Length: 231
Image 1 (spheres, helix red, strand yellow):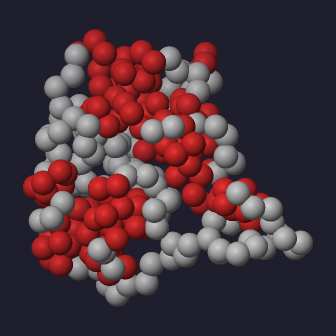
Image 2: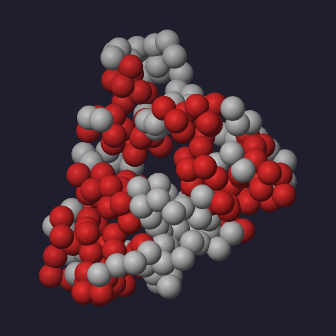
């Protein structure tokens, strides 16, 4: 998977609001006035009634084969969904459904979900406790804990806890993901993607890119070890 395809989804919020970038992504030139020439950006706004965790639980049975029962992943390269903030889960399922985030499997799954289904799944997974801590090398974990909780002033790295919280549980109102006990292989992959993505001018991806840019590959391994083994 090339960098353009891997990282493009991180720029989705800006892509949907800036006609020039949208036209560029479509391989066309924007017409006078800046409006898209043909296709408008997909609408990612969901319309749903009060979400139901009970309905979400029923729907979640089809997710268990990959993400684990109740959203607790047992595969190092598959993210757990248990305990994830609803706003983050809703957005990810929406961009998969719109085919803006790459994954043939997830695009297929999300294509069958209504707005209400997405909201119900998100609220259900949010009610579940994050999965248990993954095993991690103690020294590597300690290094990751120091970076996560305290950052690195000499390298101008802000502590991850400032946004994600000391417990890593994220912030629903800001759409900041929970990273508590995130599957280690998946966590490491995502950290690399954020650090190595080009600058898009989008708040969340840029914040992650800036925070992670000073870090080495060994630093990212340490962070992945820590967030996957938070208590």
